[in-house]
Image 1 (cartoon, helix red, strand yellow):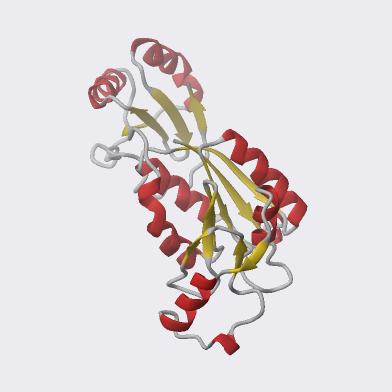
Image 2 (cartoon, rainbow, N blue to C red):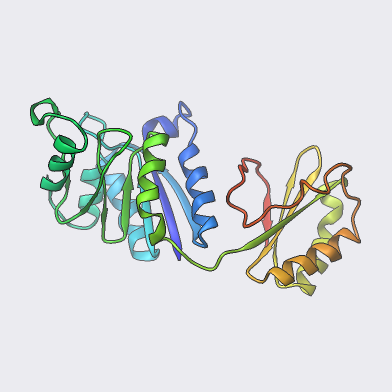
Length: 253
C-alpha cells in the first residue's frame, strides 16, 4: 500500500513547529507494512491544499492529511480537501450528535463550522479534542495536535496494510565513505535494501520482506566491517517502525 502524507500549516514551513506528526506516521505506517512515498508540507491556503491532495489522490493508494482542522480563520484543510475531490462542505449530523453526547458539548457552545466536513465523508471523532477528522475517497484527514492525531489514526490504523519489512542494524566504527564498495557487494549478493546513517558511528540498516535474507546479509556484513564496541545488542531493530529514528542519512537501493 503506497501512502502520501500531507502536513498542513504555515508554522511548519517557517520552522516554528517541528513536523513530528510525519515522523510518527512514517513509523506507524511502516510497521503495518505500508510504504510511505511522499511527505509534503503545504501552507494554510485552500488552493495549495487542494492541488497537492488532488495530485497525490490520483497517484497513491491513500493520502493522509494532518493539521488545519477547526473553525478558526487559518483552518483551511477541510475546504481544501473538499475542493480536491469536488465536494461541498456541509455540517455533518453524526459529528454533531457525537460531540453533544459522547463529547459532552452543548450545541450552542460549538463554534460555527466545527461540525463541517466534505459532503458524504465518513467522520472520525476526536477523542482527545474537538475538531473532527474524516475519510473521503481514500483521503484521511487528521488533526495537527500530535495527541489528537495519534488517537484518531488508531481508529483507522487497520485500513493500512502491506508486506511487513524485517529490519536489522549493524553499528560500524568506520567512516561511511569507506563502506561504499562493501555496500555495493552486499546488495549484489542479497535482495535487501541498505541505509547508512552516520553519526558517532555509522548505523547500517538492512531490510527486506524475507527475514532469512536479512539475517544472511547481516552475517555477511558483520564479517567484513569493524563493529562499534558495546553495540551488539543495540543493533537489533525488529520490524523498523516502533523505534524513534530521527537521524538523517542516505538510502541505497
